[in-house]
Image (cartoon, rainbow, N blue to C red; front, top):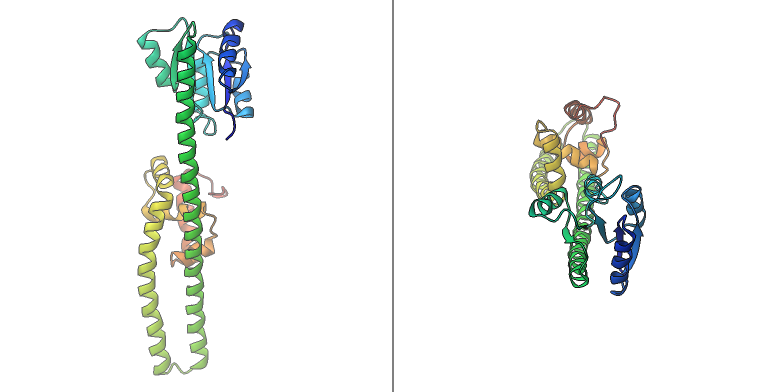
Length: 273
């Protein structure tokens, strides 16, 4: 297991050194920075496991830095502990937590309290990272299962179309035998479509519920069918593959995509992906 990296940001040199010494004694990797300016670029570069930042610094303060972190999807999960010797009231604590701070430590720093809070924050961060990794692994596995399933649907559909075409060439006079076999194939197709539809619905619910919820929040007028189209596009399917999977004509898919772009206020030349 890698040693956690702690980034300590403080414009007070003595406080910075005290914090660094305490954390180094705990066998943690410590990186220091003496103001809020440029901190976001440094955080993006080193990707620390935890940030300790002073509240009140010249230029950019700790809370301003937290707001910037929260607006960055790749960095927002990093826990931040705010340190202050000035803003120590319960209202200040509430303000820091509302901005996105994970914890709050008063100065002058107490060694036992600092170590306890840092270890607690690291433990929580590690737990959520492990949970996230398991979730991503599960999603990747489910995507592979869905892709294999969809490939089979497309293969079966092409096979049935090929059989019907061959039958028509074998029986050009549209004999009763040909009609009976074609009707049998079409009945099988309808039953298969119904089963595929149910399995597809379950797969989409498991795989893409969060994406669909966010997209629906962004554009409430999207229909269930349009959301499904967006999910297929997000998964990398071409319009032709989507038309096979949803048993829609190619032109119908193109028109549906055009309507989705209009609802999302995109130009007709924009790539929906």
